[in-house]
Image 1 (cartoon, rainbow, N blue to C red):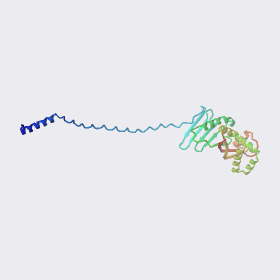
Image 2: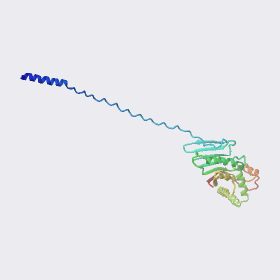
Image 3: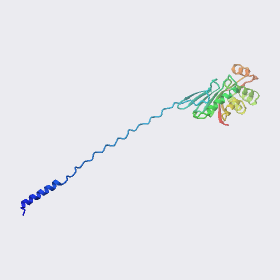
Length: 249
């Protein structure tokens, strides 16, 4: 029989042995901290496109000389053929106004081809902001001498001019020139150059008109004498300024 104290000692030894033979729990490994998320890239502002300088309208041939001036409110364009400064075109986009400058030293008929080429080139340009709606030009002996000769010869035998001359007023003179120019074929050269671009012109109004006697004093009378226009009474000598409407033909 085992003594109670011995039994207790044996029990404690057994328990201790059992504890020593048991596997100890594995240590708990804490998770490593996650790497921080990368910062988003700093947005890069796109570079502004380089400003392309304004260029002159494309030239269809080397013999057309062009100059363009652009303002914030309007574009100005001048064009002429390389071999002559006139005839020439001057265009203003805001008012849609076109100026035709003839060479008074040469017959207008000899300039029709040149002006037609310039107009064909102008009406084909994409850079021109707006198509011309009116043409302005001088209708006097230094600007359009062939027109003045036709007008004077027409008036010599026209009863309407006799009436206008006797009225002796600026209004009567202007009205006569406007009405006669619209009805008679006095500017075939101008008609021909606009027909080349599918347009026609009609006189709208005139300003600063004058008269002269053939062979009279001054440049106007001398011009009529040189052109062989007879007569002793005053004849219409055109106007410093005129405006024609440009319309589809």
